[in-house]
Image (cartoon, rainbow, N blue to C red; front, side, top):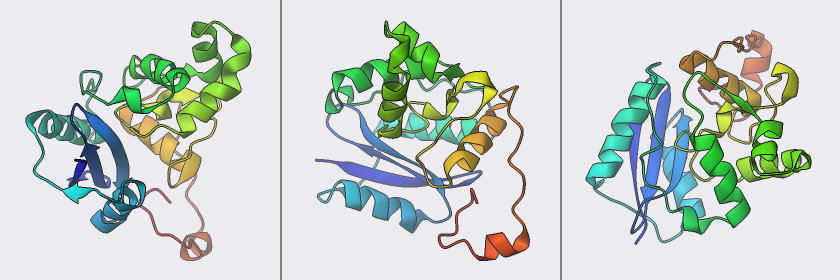
Length: 192
């Protein structure tokens, strides 16, 4: 049975979903708990809210600390990696080894996989990451210090904010949107 729980962080409501042997999904902090709950129900129609087991409670504490800028290691949090294709699993393993405040490029991951031409495939795998934060896809950047893409709500601005929270050296906070642009945003988010 797949279960989930929601929790508040310094930057919004997040969530974790788990199965028999580890996490099956994570939801990045968002404006409301309901947004996170809807995301889980859409991805897992059979999901129910549940009491988190000890390893999920530990992951929650670590994620909260990370969102407050502490350099927390999430590599020990169990995930059900067998749910993803083998290539993606290899990409996620490399991404999980990148500590807070540091980054790696899509090309560097591709080289570790044995072929620098796999950089686009690496990006595609990271765009499918079911465990953002736990598998820190936000720490993977494009060449030349460019942030690259980010498929989570808020896009690259979310990626830059997460890297800024973690103290990544090269990252500059995204420029503030003009008031008119903020008012025109269709889906409010803490990351807009």
